[in-house]
Image 1: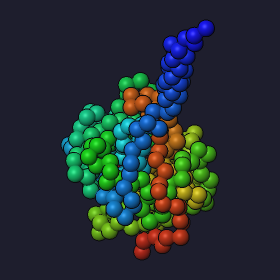
Image 2: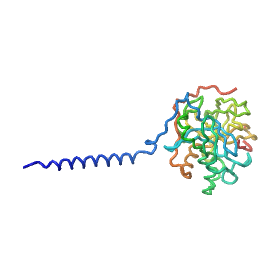
Image 3: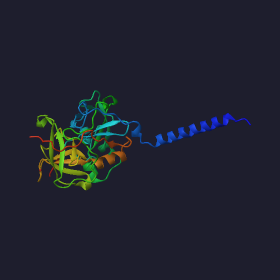
Image 4: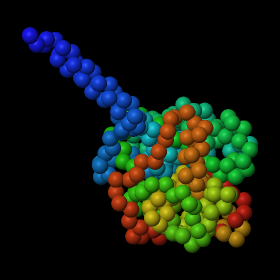
Length: 295
């Protein structure tokens, strides 16, 4: 009896097809970010990083906080009120949060091309008719999409301190150390670290009043705050000028703000990008409630 060779070749072809199908299934189950993870610059070569100045066309100049990605695009965080067009005393993002529209150009210090306003918590809350008073008052978070040409010149590490090492999810207690930076022209425009303490967690978890030296002043708005472990705590939002703690700042909780963006935004699943540099709190800083002002 002669062996029928075509039978074995058909089995081989079937086996190859099974392997191919399995490969497709594995690829489909992998996170999108695994297939399109952005590549960042070494920290000493990056021209875009947390702390660079952002200027929203038609609004104001602020300081950026952290780097985020949805697996494909890369975003730089700022405060939502950095795109605001109202008065500095208008802090309710649901009621009087007048904001420029998504797509507005944003100049990013160190970038070769303008970014674009891709998400604003103020616009998102107004779109869904948000009624939570704490969210309305303290959810002050926006994302600037970087031009793809500038992603390779970006590094996510926080200046001076390194990190972030993930997102803080349990808030802060009175006296807990916090770390930030500033470069406002009101303080001669010198980019420098600042350290201080949290006054606790209020607004049902939406905000953290903090005291730092030097304090956050107009121009520092939107900058990043880290906890004692290097976790990303939040975004500088307000300064209080009257009351028992004049000069204290309000920091919007990043964990809640990012969750809101993922729930009510249309940018896919956003995540914080951890720093490439280890967190080190041993950096020397530079050199209290009432009416809060955005800055």
